[in-house]
Image 1 (cartoon, rainbow, N blue to C red):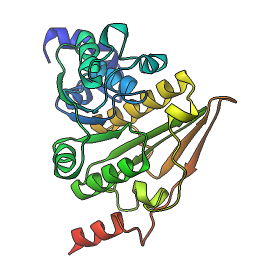
Image 2 (cartoon, helix red, strand yellow):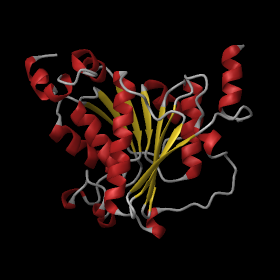
Image 3 (cartoon, one colour):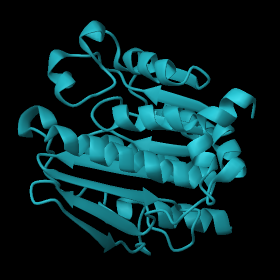
Image 4 (tube, rainbow, N blue to C red):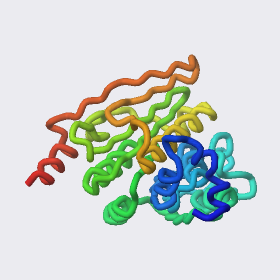
Length: 255
């Protein structure tokens, strides 16, 4: 690190758990954030400010006036601009040293697998179950830790799915693909503005811990937030031995 970086990241370096070595690991890391909306905005800004060296940001949408109630990387000057370009502006304004790759597209198939494989950690900041399952499958195949977040109305949740750990579940262990979950989205159900910031910053914190190799991640645990009553709970999640996603992949790794 040069003198400017030592000054910029000095409050991280002062933490015994992080120090110079941990900050150096962040500078050499690559995070993939899928979704540049309510969750992706605070996650992207905190990863950039923390000094994660390379950040790929994927989202096919453009900035709309209804986004500005909660998506803090965007503003009136970026209405109509792609969300990834808008967020990139804010990220670079905070930390011009970070390398931002923008993907203004819906990641799927081979493109999703390629983006996941290039990253050291993946943050799922999307709002559709089908997309979340696609991201989970890609992360399991590539052996990449997945930091998942969700927020609707006054309820939020955060977890880490890291199948590099032998007993860790994947997203499909918690929400089996094909189960008849009701799809709830902000556009129809509404969302409490600060809640997405709470969840997104928690996702950033979990990603930073994973990249720096500090603390204990939320692997095998689901953190839930009831913002209306301000109640926070952590629930245990078990790996499903018959999970069609991670059990099959683990068996292949053992062969």
